[in-house]
Length: 267
Length: 284
Image (cartoon, rainbow over all chains, first blue to last red; front, side):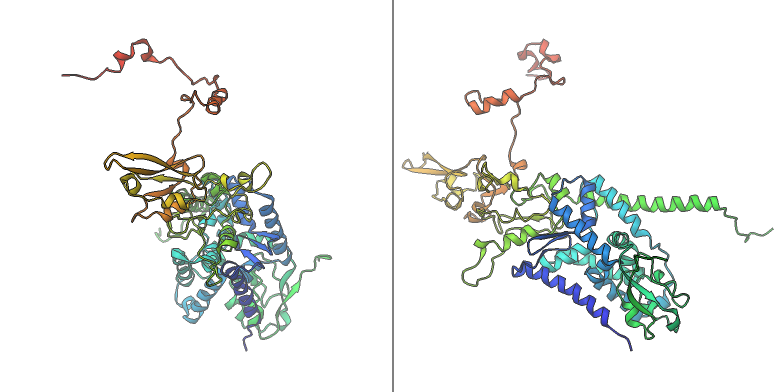
């Protein structure tokens, strides 16, 4: 019996945030205004995308305290939670790439197509290139091509031709590379891997309960982080884990669960 | 002898090939990306919100959050009294297919002009300083709509019907800085001998480029329209000074005279102007 608890919770936070942002523009709600690049809670607490701010600094912008403070707040928030919580619980593009991943499984594309090699580390190179291009062009480089902001702004202000990029990413993930965008390319995911490296929330594997059904590896968007499945009882330590909890949902044997990292007395 | 024997690849070769592979892919991606980024600038005709930094600095600093556009939409003065809902916002967030850097705020005066709200709600919400509130404040630290400069109105005298002698003062009457940004110049109409031309004249020091006049213009394609100040205005330089204007004359004091590149004697100074001006011209 597949469980949908965390999947539904994630969709709730992802869509809920989009609804709040949409309502702020359409109806003047003040709880959360702006968008994922930079927003404001009740017009008081600033929140800013740390990666966008880094790119702007690389581009040579002189920024106000507000946006710097907002970036620090969000970096701490995601840093304490841990994993790439932004990617699976907040980012709207996750819904696009999850849909592609789901359709891949339904169409047995992985079973038919030959493997395409691509490093999971491309995203970290992308972070560096984004900062260099920002410096050279004098403009936050990822922010002008980011499907995340295009989707996010699209919901709030209308899509325009930006919808083409989202379809392209869906098709890329479906036909070119499994988990291509979120799992290989997206530099924002790379930044969040680094931010959440030592966060509190982790997925823990209990080897004694595992029946080696491998359902978790089937659904996991970052399958390399589940290297310990069926081998050892240990927590997911690799930084690319998005803490999406999908593996916990599909596990029928109680072999996976969230736990809080033991920061005080490490082995 | 066997042709199918695999070549031996040393660790060193593997290492250098991997380095070349990664560096090459990174450079390829970076070049494509930088190529796009260099062309992703806005059209030079883009009108930015009030208080926007110079376009170059604006593109550096704008985080594309849309708080200015939301503040514009929900400004107090924007509620339609019939529906109780806000009318369309002046500020729009550029979409991928538009001629403005994606995600940045701009406005099209012919669609929805800027209404020049006294409290300038779009500016203080900017989290990054891309819209500079200080540039719009007077000595007392209060917002002053006279300090806005989104652009400037330009009149096409050929299509403006007031230049034909037809009485129209739509732009003059709608101007928020009435009789200051647009003034009417009264000229005698020699054709009829008994009428006046009421010619709209823009004061470039006052006009903010809000675009209300463009929206109000009665001609099919507006004869008065907004252009960014950098496009519409010239600059006379330091050589020409209004000697009769004390304020303008003060500019001389600021002109640097120890500029090493400043040359007043050139090669042709040896000759008489009547000679060198006619050089190369044949009169047959």
